[in-house]
Amino acid sequence: MRDFLGNYTCLRYNARMVMPETLPEEAAAAEAARLRSRRIAAWVLVVAWAAFIFFMSAHTGSDLDDGNGLAAVVKRWLTDAIAAATGQRVDVSPVGHFCEYFVFGALLVNAFRLHVPLKRAVTCSVVISALYAVSDEVHQIFVPGRACDPADWAVDVVAAILAALITAAILRVIQRKGDKHDDEAGGVERDEA
Image (cartoon, rainbow, N blue to C red; front, side, top):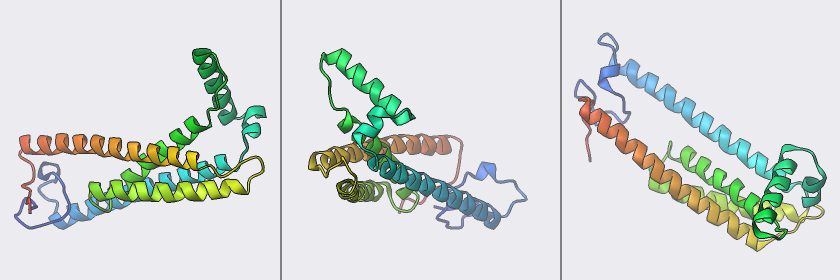
């Protein structure tokens, strides 16, 4: 793509937002700093969520059944809600696994897309989620009252795949709206090659 002076650049910015006295190099440096900050924030969220998954895997079902923490309250509420709807007590562990890895998959797509094209970000997200889910199940072998369950791994992977695809679709829509807005506003000319 070309900047407003006709120079090629790999960073996107809207020429209308650059003050006339601002040099293109300064705008590029500011954009690079914003990108670096977004990358750091995205990866901090990924690591924090991975730590949360590890924390949850280090607890047994009875810890959550007998505890008073937020996770215990949510598990009891979910168990009661499903029991009221179905008339039976149901193990909500797969729901917990699904939710954990759905968020993990979405966070990974968001982080990877800042480094690689979106299609590759989806692939990387699913692969990393699947590998982390394997490590999660192996971790549970060493937790008293927990076990390695291939069905849990399958739920984790399905959740990560769905999250990656949904997140990518949302990001594409946002990007198209941004591109359309730039085109309508007479923004930066893009080199499609």
